[in-house]
Length: 132
Image (cartoon, rainbow, N blue to C red):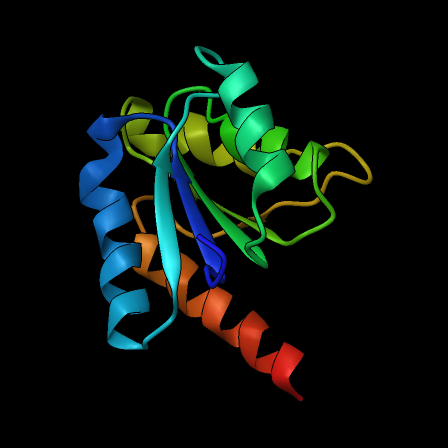
């Protein structure tokens, strides 16, 4: 989608309750977005293809368990990546720690566990800076 500004990428359809929160905020604020369900582990080639063709300015990556998706995306782009940890196991602490413990030069912003809406609000704030 050429006019997409934010890409939401979820690692699994089971993350629906969380990524729908982001969708709701983006829709309410008239921010063009698209949603992709792509696992960094199960379909790395599809993720690479998507990232190489995507024109979005910001990525929101929703992932639970090992939560590798945000870091993998950040390792393949210079665009901002916002990670949303999902409370799939261990109350989401495993996902939270995976997202915030990125190595040097692979930054990922991280919002609270299951806080898809905050990821969308952060994306909007970043977009507002780009407008100035």
